Amino acid sequence: MIQKPICCVAGKSGGHIIPCLQFAKKQYLKQNTPLLFISTTAALDKKIIAQFPEITDHLELALRNVPYWTWWKLPLFAFSFLEATWKGFWYLKKHKPSCIISTGGFVALPVCIAGKLLGIPISLFELNVIPGKAVGVLTKLATTVFICFKETQSYIKRPCVLTSYPLRFSEQDKKISPAEAKLQIGFSESKKMLLILGGSQGSQFLNNLIQQIPIALLHKYQIVHQTGAEQVTECTNFYAQNNVPAQVFAYQDNLAFYYQAADIIICRAGAGTLFEALFFEKQTIVIPLETKITDHQLDNAYAMGKMRPDLFSVVRQHDLVKEDFFLFF
Image (cartoon, rainbow, N blue to C red; front, side, top):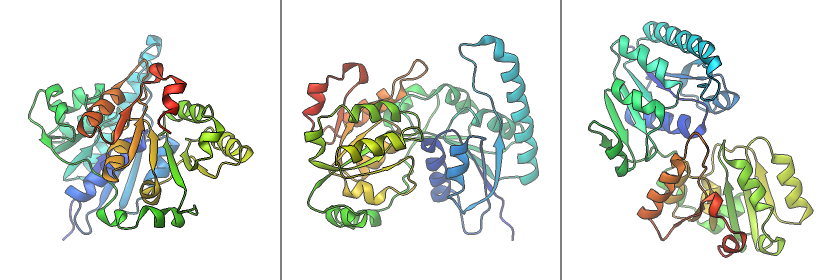
């Protein structure tokens, strides 16, 4: 008997795509269940999705960004939104999924609207403490809303299901000792390791910050640095010129060995990164990404710091004083 497929929708961030897939695999996917995925046309979406062989079909929607500051682009945005809804409608009608699963993001709106029109159940997983703008609409369309921070319930005007963050790691990933993990990634087992995770959007500030740390302090560590796509060469050259043992990459799918090997982590406050650092129980300096559009990472960071003050230290960008920051080392 052919099973109905499951359809996931998320995009423009590994922090949305990966937990969406993990949640689908753990909660809904049975053996031989077809798995569909709808994303944006972003290169990062394609790269991440290509690493999941479980996905049997992939639809990309060329959805324009919301023109917050350029109102004259609204007609083009409206057209792309209607086109995405139309394409999503016929895709869902053709494949007849048993449910739609989303972790939010703007690309989920046209798909979930189409799914609602077709009567397809929708499971929404809000990963952050304070829901984003799109989630405000999606909660009205969803059949079930899942949350991983208990504080989130106060921001959503309907009952939610509190559940664990859909991690990509298991207890098996923690069985290797930190010393063995360092050897596995080619580092000395006796020297401390610093793991720097900027995420897909918040890397540049951290990349520049690390280069302001006195070289004498950096020499205490061997460093693994996820830089984002723009500054791999610059950061690689910085470490090489200063004789700091380091591994630098733009993005890494499997960070299990790196997490287990780390003695200290510096990161942004995407929910995934925070829950992964918590899972591996690592000392973590959290510097939340704050922009004109959103400061949801700040709420994530403070919620995690409240949950485990022994592990998480929160430092805001505009409060960052170099001398104080160096004390963490």
